[in-house]
Length: 115
Image (cartoon, rainbow, N blue to C red):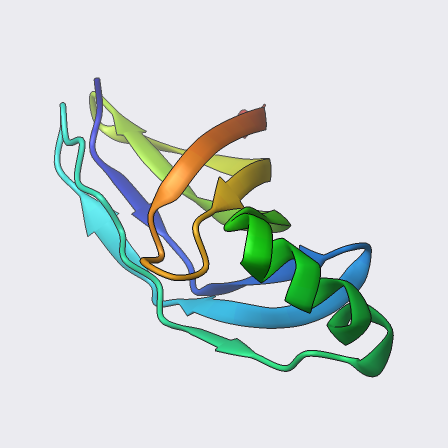
């Protein structure tokens, strides 16, 4: 495992196929072998088409959300920095009452660039 530095980005969040909001990711870095969890405050805006389904999902206590993000940065291998881009698609089910994540599935695609 290697240290990485990454640029700021924005995660798009979707509910019922409609854009719900975004979460800003600040630029940062992680040391080798890091498994630090990033907590992202989100700003959400429910559109009227999605609002009609929200009441029934809250009653079922299962809110299905999707999110996507692209992050670019560099990974240091020995003395050289290697640029990378990673795209992550997430699908998760949240309890809207307690905001617990019931189920989560992530798919990531990594591109490495040689210098």
